[in-house]
Structures are given as C-alpha cells and as structure tokens.
Length: 327
Ligand code: TMO
Image 1 (cartoon, protein in one colour):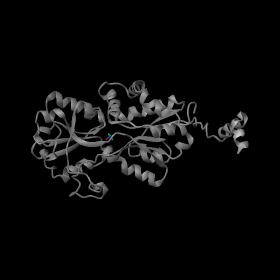
Image 2 (cartoon, protein in one colour):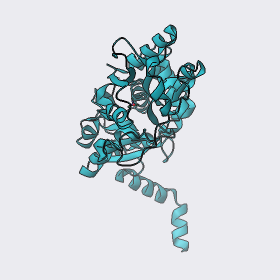
Image 3 (cartoon, rainbow, N blue to C red):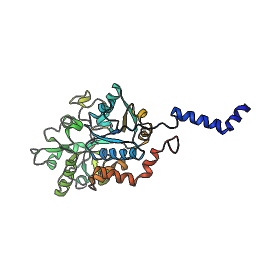
Image 4 (tube, rainbow, N blue to C red):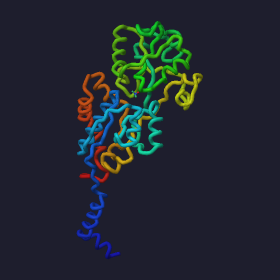
C-alpha cells in the first residue's frame, strides 16, 4: 500500500500513465479531416440551422460540406452515408422514413430538440380577428364559409393552400374528402415555401381570407398565426398508414423534433458528434432562424453567421469537450 501511494506521488509515474492514455487515444481522440456532410432542404429554419451547425463544426476545426437533398430521401441518404446527419426530423411527417432507415441499419438517433412541433393548416390571426369565418379555429366552421376562401383558380370552392406535394403527398386532399368537405373545398399545392408567405402578404393586403399549410416552430409564431383544430390524430388514421376515407379526416399530431446521424459519425468525428448530440434548439430559437430570412430578407448563410454571432452563449458550451480544455 505504502509503495503504491509513494508511486502515485512520483511525477514520473503519473506522466507514464498520462502518456499511456494519450497513446491509446482516450484523451486525444481527434476528428477526421473528412468533411461532415450536412443536408440542405427546402424550408428556411432547416437551411439556416444547417449553416448554424456547419459554422459550429468549423469553429471546432472540422471541415463541412453542404448537400442538397430531397426531404423524404434524406433518411436513406444518412443510412448509407451520403450525408452525415439530419438536424430537423419533424415527427408528424418524417417519423416513418426516419424509423424505416433506423430499422434497416445505419441511421442512429442523435437526440431531440426542446421544441415541440406542429405541421397543420391554419389562418393568420387577422382572419379570426375580422371574424371572416365565424367559429374558427374549430374546423367545422369551414362547412359554412368556403366562399370567403375562394380564389381565381379554385372554381368557386374554398382553397386550401398546401405546401409542395413532396412534403406530405396526399394527406390534405384525403383529409378534405375524409371530412366531407370536398364539394366545397379544393387543395392546391404551393410551388415552394416562399409561395405560402407571398400568399399571406397578398391576402392581408387585399383583406381576404386565406388558409395555408404552416408549421411551428416558424417565424409566424411571432407574427400571429392560428392552427385549425381538426378531429384528433391517432396512429393509423391516415390512408398511407392503413386508414380509410372514414378515418383520414384526422388532424396532424403535435410531435417531437429529432436529430439523426450515420452510425459512423461518433467514430470518425467524436468531438463533432458529441457537440451535435448536445445541441438542442427551442421554439423561439428556431423561429428566429426562419425570421432572419423570411422577415428580415437575409440569405440563409448570412442569417446563420448572424445567429451564431448573437448566440455564442447558447452554442459555444456544446463545443467544449467533457474531457476538458484542449480536447
Ligand atoms: C417540413 N415542414 C416543417 C416544412 O413542414
């Protein structure tokens, strides 16, 4: 015992142990210089967050590459390593693709953001304040006020402006049928997210009703937007999940916002991976990323640079290794 204690007091003996750890890589695991591949999709918060995460990795000395991807195909792309990670997995529209890729192998769960998500049809608050469709946000109000939402291209019916069709396929056309609204309502697909925001501005200027697909977190959380309350979602109600016309009138479920990664990421880039798992954004943080682009008019890249500069206290702690300074 005495011998052991004396040995621990001997600086040479301690040095010996420290260098053993270093050689084995326990204290000095370095990230690969190969680029971390970050996906670019087609909505603002995802794009700004891609550059926020890329900027965080670059601040740690990592190389990054941005890869434009189709949303639904991105989960297979993480699985086979074409991209390293996904940072905005919205439960209500992406969990099936996410869990399918996990089940096939290659995609791992990298944690959950603080934000709770919703992807749903809704109206800007002034539609309710002006009482353009009495009874909103209860969906049953839509039975009696389709004229208020008619547009030049809707043939006298009320128009539901859905996002691009590659976001949710036929979920909304099926819902309109399932709710028994198809005689008086028609779903139109927007060409891109920008078309939704252009429509919000145009409708407000013209003082007419509008109903669009939208989501939270988004910049509209701050500007005033109300989601319509549909019959509650349950697993299997949608036609794509085994439901029928009788059940597909269900609304969207509130859900989580997850991150995922290729299973090799923790091994090739242990520090970046650790930072990525710690990273978590709240509803106002994600809303502010979108607002820099959709309200302030910045590019996604510039918005990310500004967001990183304004929020160092938020993200810098994620980059500091639990093993201490210098690691
Ligand atoms: C995937 N999105 C957040 C645009 O609904």
